[in-house]
Amino acid sequence: MRLNRSRRHPGDAASAARTRRRTGILAAVGALVAAVAVGSTAGAQAATSEGLLCQTDPQQTFSLTARPGYVSTPDGNSIYMWGYGMSSGQFQLPGPVLCVTSGQPVTVILHNDLPEATSILFPGQKAVKANGNPAQPQFDAPAPAGSLTSMVQPAGASGGSVTYTFTAGSPGTYLYSSGTDVTKQQQMGLYGALVVRPAGAAGQVNARADSAFNPQHEYVFLLSEIDPEVHLAVERSQPVDWSAYNARYYLINGRSMPDTLAPNNASWLPSQPYGALVHIKPYDPTSNPLPAVIRYLNAGRGNYPFHPHGSDERVVNKDGHALQGTSTTAPQDLSYLKYDIDVMPGQTVDALMDWRDVEQWNATTNPIPTQLPVITDQLLVGADTWFSESPYLGNKGTFPSNITVNNECGEYYHVAHSHALQQATNYGAAFGGMMTVFRIDPPAGCPTS
Image 1 (spheres, rainbow, N blue to C red):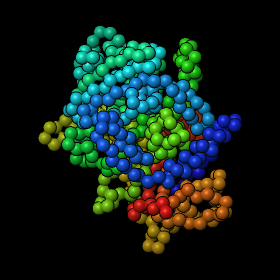
Image 2: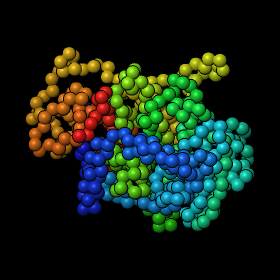
Image 3: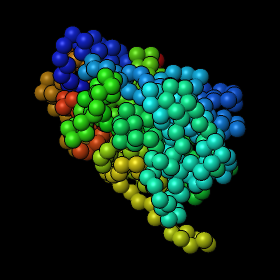
Image 4: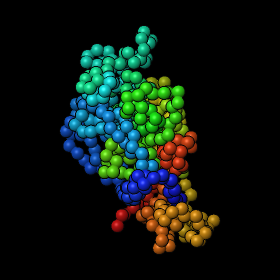
């Protein structure tokens, strides 16, 4: 169970970027989950090097600013973007993860520092108002006359603002994004995640008790794509030729592999605060009974078939609704196991994920019948590896002195990526893009010293 890296980088700038990325990756794979509690001040965000960074507020009031900025890619490119950020902060991609409670009022104040009008659409939320007036169509009612864009109250260019209010809907995950010139502005980066938690049951995906998850292992995978030619045209105030659209970068939480493995708020990715490394331990009915949850969102133009190696995931929610029957007395559980999570444009999918040591391999009591070849006969690409040189969880073997071993304690690393393999590239170079890693530590944990 190993992960080796091989990337192609043209030019000196890319070489410098490669060195910068490698330092960050080593820090990322060595990080343990370390949630730090913060006070309940306005706009507070829980601090953790891995997993969900949740923007919260006691009054569920958030002030966002749409700004221009730049993001970096693993091949050394720098791309002009637009994004929502906290008004007290700076440009970021994607927008903050807003965490609220179902049934409670929410206020989002949008300030606009962009050169054209923009807005926020909140799909799945009913009776959204802008400055006290209806702000978006009600999707459970007949569509009124007029286009969707014309019904979303915008904030005017270069300094405008608008205040949206609504009551948080059913528990689950929702995409929020621009409702103005949607094709262009969503491609430019105006999107984020809204997490609605059940009232009185923050550790569940929905109101069903069987949707409970481990709050220390909650992850958001906001999937998107970039055509750099579109962004260059917008940066130069030139018209966009949408007939020539060709996505070149594919992102999880605003990053491409291997940056997806870097920790949250990595200093070398100042505009891309969210990592995508999933870090768990095997299921155990006593010591680790609850699964992780991965909240998938699609802010792109195409279907993203996300495919983790080594484990199924249980899909429990779609588009903010629990998968269950309509009976009010005993709703039928309609959740299902899936090895490839298909996420359509604009869709959200909430999946519970645990890793089970089904074979229970043990070098003494239950050895693997096929022995590994000697290390001189193995293909180790590059001078570093995350393989432990042992197939047994929690065991480490020995390596030649020229090999840098990033595996700390015999943990496993399973690749997870888009199964549309062109989406697992950086400008066509393989082993990048919409890809990350699931790290499985031994049951007793993984000490770093």
